[in-house]
Length: 339
Image (cartoon, rainbow, N blue to C red; front, side):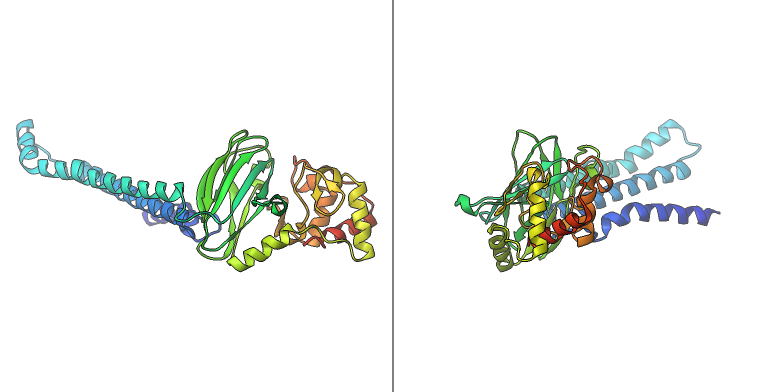
């Protein structure tokens, strides 16, 4: 029976810690960038030290409870404590805590330095605006004609720092990509500055970590780190306007888009659509997900999202679209060309 209880306790501890110690997409204990790596080192140090302190204190309490002095008067206890226990009080109560605090303070300063500024000038400035419940991503350039807007996905070049300017269009959000950087609050009427750098190519998941309403849990940004050349190619493609329809189906889909509520809420550069309520759809077919991470970007999911987004993500601003089946298929055909 005792062995069973020990096994149950060990299982509980493993379940509580396994998610933090694995290399899962939202794991904050391993970093793939300068900021996250510095924060991970600090986190591991605090975890190890805290575990050791709890273990030692627990062991001493148990030892004292079962092996304390018995049958001695107060004078003998006082003498024993004054001669045998005083050095350990100095070591355990003063020296060791002082060393732990000094090391923790040094690691904290290093983490703050890594978070405050990159080692070199950022290669790009990206403005991220939180909406309920998606992320607007604006890439700025000295030439206004080269500025473009996308949604939910942040592309960055590997090994190069990128400056983030974060604000909100409605309520308080929080931008967090744990394998690249810590949390930054996203506040209406205020702009907070952060920076990202990825040491290796890949797709890094993020999350909104400030409760912002019904679909708070379905507001996941994605950071895609690419080689500098791939990033430059992607950036050039994103600056371009949407391609004109080349098939009867996609041409019919563009007509459906322009005559329906789609053009009122969404913008497509190169088409007669200037809506500002929902995400920019100029290159929607090139994105990995729909609905800020709710669905994989596929033809079937796109049709389902257009037809009834409220059934998939209740409370979002997109209304139920009552389109004829042929119109819906034509609209999907057109949107699939926007790469």
